[in-house]
Length: 53
Image (cartoon, rainbow, N blue to C red; front, side):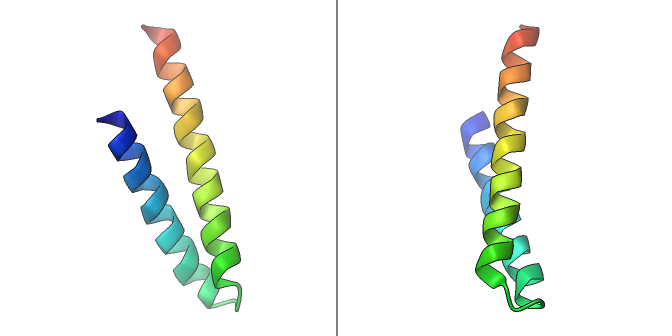
């Protein structure tokens, strides 16, 4: 379930980044940036949640 949620967050972040980047003529750059940030955040969250168990 967590994996599905992480993938959904990354996809949503890339769509938002694409839209924001399109306004600055860097659509794919914005999508890549937002997806990377969301991916790192999801990875860190997964590591921290395993440590708390």
